[in-house]
Image 1 (cartoon, helix red, strand yellow):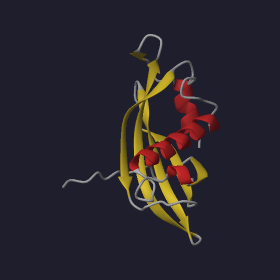
Image 2 (cartoon, rainbow, N blue to C red; image 1 turned 30 degrees about the horizontal axis):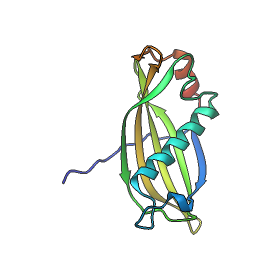
Image 3 (spheres, rainbow, N blue to C red; image 1 turned 180 degrees about the vertical axis):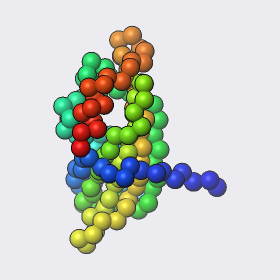
Image 4 (cartoon, rainbow, N blue to C red; image 1 turned 135 degrees about the vertical axis):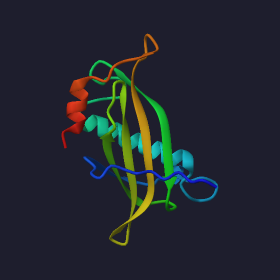
Length: 144
C-alpha cells in the first residue's frame, strides 16, 4: 500500500495551542480523522485572523479549500494538549498551500501527531469563480 508522505515547510510562522475535548473523541476513544481535519480548520482560522483575515474576507477575495492531505502519526486522547504550527507556501496565480504540524505536548516534550497540507484557492462566492491571489495577501502571509 502506498502511503502519503508530506514534506512540510522548513519554518512555521504561526503556532497555536489547543486542548482535546471529550466531544473530539470517536467510538474508538481517540480523535478521529474528521476531527483532525476540524483541528487544522481551527488552526487555519486562527492563522488567518493573526494576519487580519477571514476565509470570506481575504483582500477582497474568499478562500475555498481545493484539497487536503493528512499524514497521521500518533493518537490523540481526551485532555491532550496539542500545538499546531502553520506556514503558507507554494503561492501561485490563484492560491497557496498551508502546511500544518500537529504535535502532542507529552511529558514536557513534543511528539508528532500529524502532518497536513491544505490547498487554498481565492474564490468569489457570488460569481462562483476563481479569483487571482491578491499580492497584498502574499506579502502579509510571507511576513514572518
